[in-house]
Length: 224
Image (tube, one colour):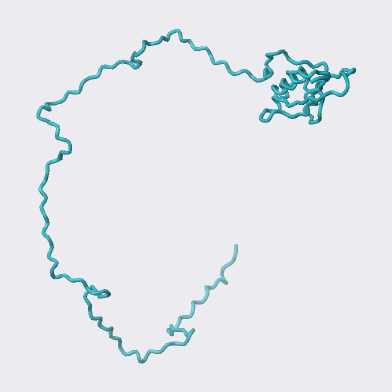
């Protein structure tokens, strides 16, 4: 593409990247001060570089994306600018520059002295050799193996149980009472003709109640 192009950034970053980290990467890329970086991330379109040819504009876009910032470029109206802006003094970092150099370095493990160690031959027993003491076994010459499926235990003779005589039993009819019926003798009640039912709310206890005792005399008591 012919003509001149300008790179514009409006504060957008690559999804999933940390904003503070992207700001640090862009500051390291352009060697810019923090206040200038904050203006870039204000959300308003800012022209980062003008008077670029097409390949140079693509290099700016790629470098910013590597740092985590999403910039865009557009064709510049007219010829190259006469007035130089503050952003014209910015430059791209050399190829191979670590843009994430602000990250803390991973911890370095302490050195370990391995001079006293050596590799064992292939097939060597790594565990410490221990002598296996054989366990003494008694005389088993009289013991033999039984055949497959043989009964190991001593067979016992099963005594058959005599069959019970059920000839005198029969099935009762449906609904019949199986238990023996017993005659229920009626309970004898004496003469209750002189008993009447009291009215509702009547006092059934007619015994004479004693009057409550008089209260104790306290006229001879005085408060101290």
